[in-house]
Length: 377
Length: 212
Image (cartoon, rainbow over all chains, first blue to last red; front, top):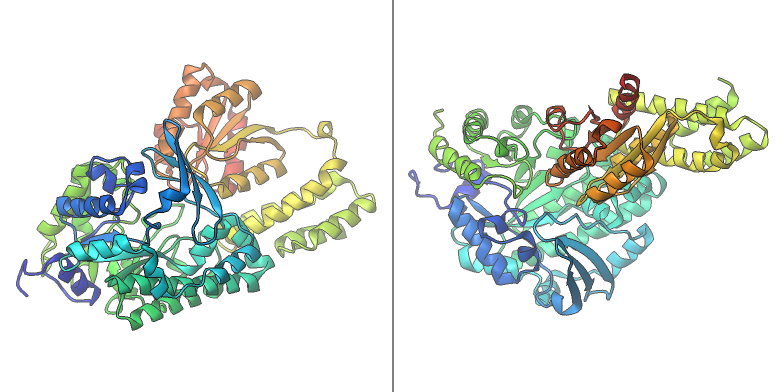
């Protein structure tokens, strides 16, 4: 195809297939923390908003910036607010939610316009295993419950032109979210067999969720492994409790021709070779933080011709600095990593609401200007 | 170091969470000075901390060691008179409002306690006003503030500003920490110290007090 004959979706697919598209695809991590801002909404408007609000605002953000993907995920049942009490306390909402699947009630705090605290569970390990056994639902029953409407509507609206990508947690990280990180870590030492059982059950559940996303038209998944880096667990713990299940998940999804982008949060350098045995279609990493360095040049040497690499543009500091800084760092990243294809310009972390809109515009504009193949910066 | 000291240190280093309780209880029954036991435990934690700095031990192992330490100290605590030990200083610690991360904070709390500091833990999601109220009430030597999220980092600035407005800023040293914080940012916002991890937090606290 000649220059600019690729649409966004084709551009992303070409990069994921390790080819050179017309120019470097841009896939910033723009999600619920930032989409509201682009639409003049508050974060709580998005979280409490209906499916159409989410669909329209996601598309509007994509059209404003002209990047190359749209993220989506499993939504709450469309009538979830019928089973919830929502109280406004001025700068936050208190949400008392009764879950329709199991009748349990959870209480969570939703700031009016800040990123909601991550929901961390407090189940015991035995209760978690029991819950996961109870929650086993095949994918074709999952889609009946309207939890995939957000994904489906996006695919219907723009799926031919842009790569609508589903967000999914990775098994080990999901166990950490359900149990709490500290209880999970203690259990790695005290009850390793039970943790393995829990991670395996969660893997099966995630496979069914991914299949349900595929049923509604999702062709790519962004799989987030949040707690398996060596800044938290040892390499041997990663190999035992995270790696085999991530491999199983990716393998099952690739059987359905789904593109798997493995987003690894945390320090990866000591376990890079192991990570690559997951054989994801693409890998994404955080920016430098938490006291560790991520050497994307070294990673690129390992992934070249094997997997697509997402750039980890620093969304914490650089993306909040000057437009000149943004432009220079985009050019540097493209110059070092894009030649030959198999590269997508992403951000290391979700973009937060205090990032100036002009800086994201600069990010995308610079990639379009200097990222045309063959790269000639 | 005698047998009990060696065994205590090994129990910690081996992360033998089931072995610590009988070991401590037997040692106390045999009349071993509880302060000596605490000293051996601190030695063990320092050893693990050194290995962590070298990259031979990981956060998961630190967390486990901290859990064992907590069990041990809870058993020993009734045997130690509060007045019998000299406090290195008083630290108030908490995670800012909007942030519920606490693993790093809790590790630092454990290390501070084992190194002789008195620690008041305000928990997580702590409103700025509560930090100020407790500084006014308790008059700590150090206020240790944790923020793991970039969205909640501005709360640290709010706390420092609120302390100034309350006329309390000069009465307390401020140490901050969290995954996304860098030394440069910490200096720019007026913190007295920055601790990127548990091990350095102790040194930072000790330096802050020796310089004041």
